[in-house]
Length: 215
Image 1 (cartoon, one colour):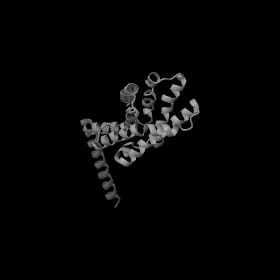
Image 2 (cartoon, rainbow, N blue to C red):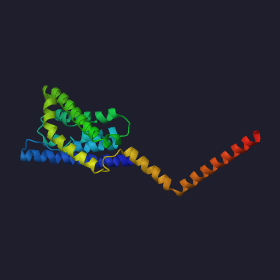
Image 3 (cartoon, rainbow, N blue to C red):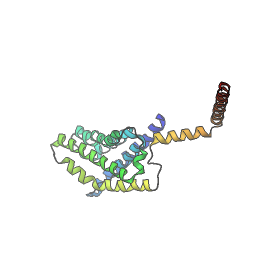
Image 4 (tube, helix red, strand yellow):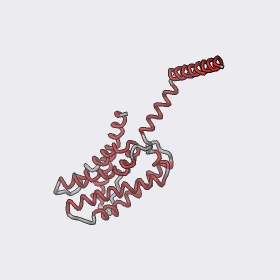
């Protein structure tokens, strides 16, 4: 389980970093008013798969921005682009250990979850901007600037859900179900199951004999 989780999250982290780098690079080159990144999309998928462990995906995805954005203060960049991203994990953290497949089953719940991630990030970015340059409208500015990106991300995630993509699965339950399925296919498991049934039958017979003798 741990090895699978590490490898899976490693792949998602690399994809998130590449996405943020390419988005920032083309944004600076083209000079578009809209900043489109799929790093948050990748994080949301990872969070459904692995829960709070996905926090590393969203934190490390901000690393490219430390180099592509004009930052005079490195510490401010780390606070805004990396540390502030921790808040994105709050919704799934508060959701607890419940089956995350329940989020995916309902398009409304999934959409609410996406919005909660946006709100959480907006709050954290707003706090970071207040600390860095006393900008008290940071929450509003970030929220408005990211609506386009989150709208695209939401559409893609809902399409994944519609086509029942195996990307959107709670991996803990997925692996548990796969393990149970393998056990039922194992001949040894069937033999043990048959032995258990035979023992139950013998026990019932003995109970009947004892009851008859008592009468």
